[in-house]
Image (cartoon, rainbow, N blue to C red; front, side, top):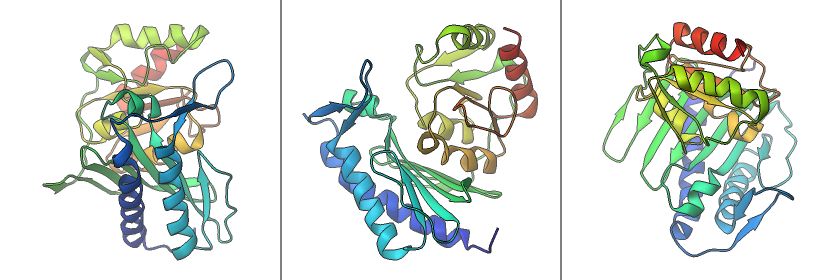
Length: 263
Protein backbone atom coordinates (compact mmCIF):
# COMPACT_ATOMS: atom_id res chain seq x y z
CA UNK A 1 0.00 0.00 0.00
CA UNK A 2 1.32 3.42 -0.91
CA UNK A 3 1.72 5.99 1.87
CA UNK A 4 -1.47 7.82 2.78
CA UNK A 5 -2.28 10.45 5.41
CA UNK A 6 -5.30 8.87 7.04
CA UNK A 7 -5.93 11.83 9.35
CA UNK A 8 -6.27 13.96 6.23
CA UNK A 9 -8.50 11.34 4.63
CA UNK A 10 -10.71 11.17 7.73
CA UNK A 11 -11.08 14.95 7.72
CA UNK A 12 -12.21 14.69 4.10
CA UNK A 13 -14.63 11.87 5.00
CA UNK A 14 -16.16 14.15 7.64
CA UNK A 15 -16.63 16.82 4.97
CA UNK A 16 -18.37 14.26 2.79
CA UNK A 17 -20.63 13.40 5.72
CA UNK A 18 -21.36 17.10 6.31
CA UNK A 19 -22.41 17.50 2.69
CA UNK A 20 -24.52 14.35 2.75
CA UNK A 21 -26.25 15.34 5.97
CA UNK A 22 -27.09 18.78 4.61
CA UNK A 23 -28.70 17.11 1.58
CA UNK A 24 -30.63 14.53 3.62
CA UNK A 25 -31.98 16.25 6.73
CA UNK A 26 -34.43 18.58 4.91
CA UNK A 27 -36.23 15.42 3.69
CA UNK A 28 -36.23 13.45 6.96
CA UNK A 29 -39.64 12.90 8.55
CA UNK A 30 -41.25 14.75 5.67
CA UNK A 31 -43.67 13.52 3.03
CA UNK A 32 -41.59 12.37 0.05
CA UNK A 33 -41.89 10.14 -2.98
CA UNK A 34 -40.43 6.66 -2.56
CA UNK A 35 -39.34 4.61 -5.58
CA UNK A 36 -38.89 0.85 -5.59
CA UNK A 37 -35.74 -0.46 -7.32
CA UNK A 38 -36.58 -4.16 -6.96
CA UNK A 39 -39.07 -6.20 -8.98
CA UNK A 40 -40.85 -8.69 -6.75
CA UNK A 41 -39.62 -7.08 -3.55
CA UNK A 42 -39.02 -3.71 -1.93
CA UNK A 43 -35.73 -1.84 -2.26
CA UNK A 44 -36.62 1.82 -1.71
CA UNK A 45 -34.79 4.91 -2.89
CA UNK A 46 -35.67 8.57 -2.34
CA UNK A 47 -34.58 11.98 -3.52
CA UNK A 48 -32.53 12.21 -0.31
CA UNK A 49 -30.46 9.11 -1.22
CA UNK A 50 -29.64 10.47 -4.66
CA UNK A 51 -29.01 14.04 -3.52
CA UNK A 52 -26.58 12.91 -0.82
CA UNK A 53 -24.59 10.65 -3.12
CA UNK A 54 -24.50 13.36 -5.78
CA UNK A 55 -22.94 15.96 -3.48
CA UNK A 56 -20.39 13.48 -2.13
CA UNK A 57 -19.39 12.40 -5.63
CA UNK A 58 -18.97 16.02 -6.66
CA UNK A 59 -16.62 16.71 -3.73
CA UNK A 60 -14.52 13.67 -4.61
CA UNK A 61 -14.41 14.68 -8.28
CA UNK A 62 -13.37 18.22 -7.37
CA UNK A 63 -10.75 17.43 -4.72
CA UNK A 64 -9.71 13.79 -5.25
CA UNK A 65 -10.04 13.35 -9.02
CA UNK A 66 -7.70 10.34 -9.15
CA UNK A 67 -9.71 8.42 -6.54
CA UNK A 68 -12.48 6.09 -7.68
CA UNK A 69 -16.05 5.95 -6.39
CA UNK A 70 -18.33 3.00 -5.68
CA UNK A 71 -21.81 4.09 -4.64
CA UNK A 72 -25.24 2.57 -4.30
CA UNK A 73 -27.21 4.91 -6.53
CA UNK A 74 -24.98 5.70 -9.52
CA UNK A 75 -22.42 3.88 -11.72
CA UNK A 76 -18.87 3.40 -10.39
CA UNK A 77 -15.99 5.71 -11.23
CA UNK A 78 -12.75 3.86 -11.94
CA UNK A 79 -9.75 4.69 -9.75
CA UNK A 80 -6.58 5.98 -11.36
CA UNK A 81 -4.38 5.34 -8.32
CA UNK A 82 -5.79 2.28 -6.56
CA UNK A 83 -7.73 4.35 -4.00
CA UNK A 84 -11.52 4.57 -4.01
CA UNK A 85 -14.39 5.86 -1.89
CA UNK A 86 -17.35 3.60 -1.16
CA UNK A 87 -20.56 5.53 -0.48
CA UNK A 88 -23.93 4.48 0.89
CA UNK A 89 -25.79 7.79 1.14
CA UNK A 90 -28.55 6.38 3.34
CA UNK A 91 -27.90 2.95 4.77
CA UNK A 92 -31.31 2.00 6.11
CA UNK A 93 -33.64 3.77 3.68
CA UNK A 94 -36.55 1.73 5.05
CA UNK A 95 -35.87 3.19 8.49
CA UNK A 96 -35.43 6.65 6.95
CA UNK A 97 -38.85 6.63 5.32
CA UNK A 98 -40.38 5.27 8.56
CA UNK A 99 -38.85 8.16 10.52
CA UNK A 100 -36.58 6.07 12.76
CA UNK A 101 -33.19 7.67 13.56
CA UNK A 102 -30.93 4.66 13.01
CA UNK A 103 -30.20 5.16 9.30
CA UNK A 104 -26.64 6.25 8.57
CA UNK A 105 -24.36 7.67 5.92
CA UNK A 106 -21.59 5.14 5.24
CA UNK A 107 -18.28 6.36 3.83
CA UNK A 108 -15.21 4.18 3.31
CA UNK A 109 -11.79 4.61 1.78
CA UNK A 110 -10.46 1.49 0.08
CA UNK A 111 -7.14 0.55 -1.45
CA UNK A 112 -7.37 -2.01 -4.24
CA UNK A 113 -10.91 -2.74 -3.03
CA UNK A 114 -9.84 -3.40 0.58
CA UNK A 115 -11.43 -1.08 3.18
CA UNK A 116 -8.84 0.84 5.21
CA UNK A 117 -10.88 3.71 6.69
CA UNK A 118 -14.53 3.90 7.64
CA UNK A 119 -17.01 6.50 8.84
CA UNK A 120 -20.53 5.74 10.07
CA UNK A 121 -22.44 9.03 10.38
CA UNK A 122 -25.92 9.65 11.78
CA UNK A 123 -26.69 13.28 10.87
CA UNK A 124 -29.99 13.59 12.76
CA UNK A 125 -28.61 12.39 16.09
CA UNK A 126 -25.23 13.96 15.40
CA UNK A 127 -23.09 10.87 16.01
CA UNK A 128 -20.12 9.70 13.97
CA UNK A 129 -18.13 6.49 14.42
CA UNK A 130 -14.78 6.39 12.64
CA UNK A 131 -11.90 3.96 12.38
CA UNK A 132 -8.63 3.29 10.56
CA UNK A 133 -5.64 1.17 11.57
CA UNK A 134 -5.67 1.42 15.40
CA UNK A 135 -7.38 4.82 15.55
CA UNK A 136 -11.06 4.86 16.47
CA UNK A 137 -13.35 7.66 17.60
CA UNK A 138 -16.90 8.50 18.54
CA UNK A 139 -17.72 12.12 17.78
CA UNK A 140 -20.99 13.67 18.96
CA UNK A 141 -22.18 17.26 19.25
CA UNK A 142 -20.72 17.42 22.76
CA UNK A 143 -17.80 14.98 22.99
CA UNK A 144 -15.07 13.05 21.24
CA UNK A 145 -13.73 9.79 22.66
CA UNK A 146 -12.05 6.58 21.67
CA UNK A 147 -14.25 3.71 20.60
CA UNK A 148 -13.73 0.47 22.50
CA UNK A 149 -15.75 -2.71 22.18
CA UNK A 150 -17.18 -4.53 25.19
CA UNK A 151 -15.40 -7.34 27.03
CA UNK A 152 -18.28 -9.82 26.76
CA UNK A 153 -16.97 -13.28 25.92
CA UNK A 154 -20.02 -15.55 26.38
CA UNK A 155 -22.93 -15.81 23.95
CA UNK A 156 -25.47 -16.16 26.76
CA UNK A 157 -24.32 -12.76 28.09
CA UNK A 158 -24.31 -11.03 24.70
CA UNK A 159 -26.58 -8.40 23.19
CA UNK A 160 -27.18 -9.30 19.55
CA UNK A 161 -28.46 -6.92 16.88
CA UNK A 162 -29.42 -7.26 13.24
CA UNK A 163 -31.39 -5.26 10.70
CA UNK A 164 -34.54 -7.30 10.27
CA UNK A 165 -36.03 -10.36 11.92
CA UNK A 166 -36.91 -11.60 8.43
CA UNK A 167 -33.58 -10.79 6.81
CA UNK A 168 -32.68 -14.49 6.65
CA UNK A 169 -34.29 -17.35 4.73
CA UNK A 170 -33.88 -21.12 4.55
CA UNK A 171 -30.89 -22.52 6.38
CA UNK A 172 -29.62 -19.03 7.20
CA UNK A 173 -32.84 -18.36 9.13
CA UNK A 174 -32.31 -21.54 11.15
CA UNK A 175 -28.69 -20.63 11.80
CA UNK A 176 -29.54 -17.12 12.97
CA UNK A 177 -32.36 -18.48 15.14
CA UNK A 178 -29.86 -20.73 16.93
CA UNK A 179 -27.67 -17.73 17.81
CA UNK A 180 -30.67 -15.60 18.78
CA UNK A 181 -31.95 -18.28 21.14
CA UNK A 182 -28.52 -18.55 22.78
CA UNK A 183 -27.98 -14.79 23.16
CA UNK A 184 -29.09 -12.81 26.18
CA UNK A 185 -30.99 -10.16 24.21
CA UNK A 186 -31.71 -9.43 20.54
CA UNK A 187 -32.71 -6.09 18.98
CA UNK A 188 -33.71 -5.30 15.40
CA UNK A 189 -33.84 -2.41 12.93
CA UNK A 190 -30.26 -1.20 13.26
CA UNK A 191 -28.70 -1.38 9.76
CA UNK A 192 -25.17 0.13 9.84
CA UNK A 193 -25.87 1.89 13.14
CA UNK A 194 -25.61 -1.46 14.92
CA UNK A 195 -21.92 -1.66 14.08
CA UNK A 196 -21.39 1.76 15.64
CA UNK A 197 -23.08 0.49 18.81
CA UNK A 198 -20.78 -2.53 18.72
CA UNK A 199 -17.70 -0.33 18.33
CA UNK A 200 -18.72 1.83 21.31
CA UNK A 201 -19.34 -1.20 23.52
CA UNK A 202 -23.14 -1.02 23.89
CA UNK A 203 -23.88 -4.19 21.96
CA UNK A 204 -21.71 -7.24 21.61
CA UNK A 205 -22.63 -9.06 18.41
CA UNK A 206 -24.00 -8.22 14.94
CA UNK A 207 -25.06 -10.87 12.43
CA UNK A 208 -26.29 -10.01 8.94
CA UNK A 209 -26.52 -11.41 5.45
CA UNK A 210 -26.95 -10.15 1.90
CA UNK A 211 -24.81 -7.02 2.28
CA UNK A 212 -23.37 -5.30 -0.79
CA UNK A 213 -19.92 -3.66 -0.70
CA UNK A 214 -21.44 -0.20 -0.16
CA UNK A 215 -23.31 -1.62 2.87
CA UNK A 216 -20.18 -3.15 4.31
CA UNK A 217 -16.93 -1.35 3.48
CA UNK A 218 -17.28 1.45 6.05
CA UNK A 219 -18.16 -0.97 8.85
CA UNK A 220 -15.04 -3.12 8.70
CA UNK A 221 -12.39 -0.51 9.67
CA UNK A 222 -14.62 0.94 12.40
CA UNK A 223 -15.19 -2.42 14.10
CA UNK A 224 -11.57 -3.50 13.81
CA UNK A 225 -10.08 -0.20 14.98
CA UNK A 226 -12.28 -0.39 18.08
CA UNK A 227 -10.88 -3.85 18.87
CA UNK A 228 -13.68 -5.98 17.46
CA UNK A 229 -13.70 -8.97 15.13
CA UNK A 230 -15.56 -8.97 11.81
CA UNK A 231 -15.62 -11.87 9.32
CA UNK A 232 -18.03 -13.85 7.19
CA UNK A 233 -20.12 -16.66 8.70
CA UNK A 234 -17.19 -19.07 8.33
CA UNK A 235 -14.75 -16.88 10.24
CA UNK A 236 -12.96 -15.83 7.05
CA UNK A 237 -11.92 -12.42 5.75
CA UNK A 238 -13.98 -12.82 2.58
CA UNK A 239 -17.26 -10.97 2.25
CA UNK A 240 -18.19 -11.88 -1.32
CA UNK A 241 -21.45 -13.49 -0.17
CA UNK A 242 -22.39 -10.46 1.97
CA UNK A 243 -22.70 -12.49 5.18
CA UNK A 244 -21.20 -10.89 8.28
CA UNK A 245 -20.48 -11.73 11.90
CA UNK A 246 -19.07 -8.89 14.01
CA UNK A 247 -18.24 -9.47 17.66
CA UNK A 248 -16.62 -7.65 20.55
CA UNK A 249 -14.15 -10.40 21.51
CA UNK A 250 -12.49 -13.40 19.84
CA UNK A 251 -14.19 -15.75 22.32
CA UNK A 252 -17.68 -14.43 21.55
CA UNK A 253 -16.96 -14.46 17.84
CA UNK A 254 -15.83 -18.09 18.00
CA UNK A 255 -19.00 -19.09 19.87
CA UNK A 256 -21.20 -17.31 17.34
CA UNK A 257 -19.43 -18.97 14.40
CA UNK A 258 -19.64 -22.38 16.07
CA UNK A 259 -23.37 -21.93 16.67
CA UNK A 260 -23.98 -20.88 13.07
CA UNK A 261 -22.01 -23.84 11.73
CA UNK A 262 -23.76 -26.30 14.06
CA UNK A 263 -26.97 -26.05 12.01
